[in-house]
Length: 508
Ligand SMILES: [Ca+2]
Image (tube, rainbow, N blue to C red; front, side):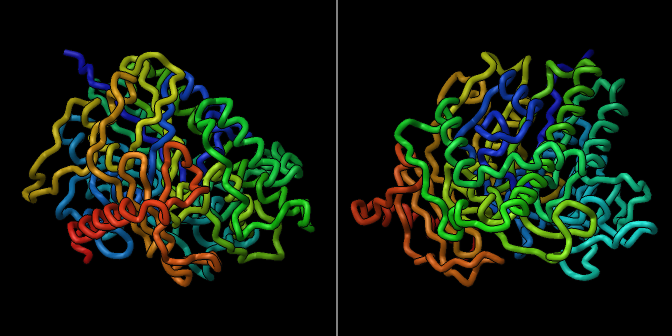
């Protein structure tokens, strides 16, 4: 008997802003993601955990990262949690991961110990795109975050460290796509459904891209970030993603006015490299979708796409003498462009204002999600991905797994919301906490604080007050009108929820 359960493809971008891709108002060319959105549905109020590791811990387990992750790195130890891959593998799915892991590489934490039958990719947070390892003959030495800081990669149970690719044309984004396409090819005659987790590192720093992709965008950003924010907000409104009541947030306090900037050509190059990274990822997604089509699986595959956190405002330039792009450059795109990547929201990765935690979410499943091209506003969070995927696959969430008892899932299935059947009723609040940046969302209300300035990595923060701000996200998702003075009772109630949650996660 043929297995009629859907295949699942979960694609994650890294440090990509809310409005970078075309179907979320961006000017970067992403025809494959746009096509996915027009054949599927966009969820405009989906949220993540503001940083790489904690996002991945929640995404894989349906738990708060503060429950599931061990230590400051949110490593996924097999104690109180179970991953999507473990559950689906137990239900008869094939399980593949290509790309970034970042949840620990001890023997019991690595992807091959957490349910993935096949794995290829970067085990840690970020690495050089052209060469994560040792210098190769005939090319400049690869730049790393710190001297000699070569990050571990892995393949099917083996840790590759250092990982020095033999292929002179190696580029990480393409390598992840190649592995994913290879898995789909290898299982083309296998009747069992599959779960593919494709975790790109693009466009996380270092900003590095292929010259032909950079050339496509060179000069397009000379109009500057102020104009880019204005145009993106206009498109978000035209698309119906931004509500008419929202007011575009002001330019971030860290960002100068574009017209007052010198060295515009160098700034244009930075954003061109970043755009090229997103473009190349989209090209890769196009190859994966083409493989699904070619193998007759497009119709019954649920494809989901999201970003793990908002655009990154960190200021790093390890190689000021090298223009951004090639193997021997290592820098970030910078806060000014990241502020525009996160249009129309405030702040960046790490922060729990919407610029840090809002993600574009695209879902497409021709056989399972009707009325394509819709936009849905149901509030969602990473903890909902596991129950949504298990719901689609018809698999149950276990109370015990591998002899250990696991915590009850914190999220809820969004499948009916994706189908447009009902609005997702969410009784429980959503919570955030990363190094003092905290938030609670319940219904239309959100409180948020950015803690103490010194707690932030490579981001100067002269404006943090440590106080809770209060916003009505239904009319003001851009967080421009702080209502905490007007409604101190709401602030107190939501703060009490945060304190209870923090205790429940065993952290108080
Ligand atoms: Ca990230």
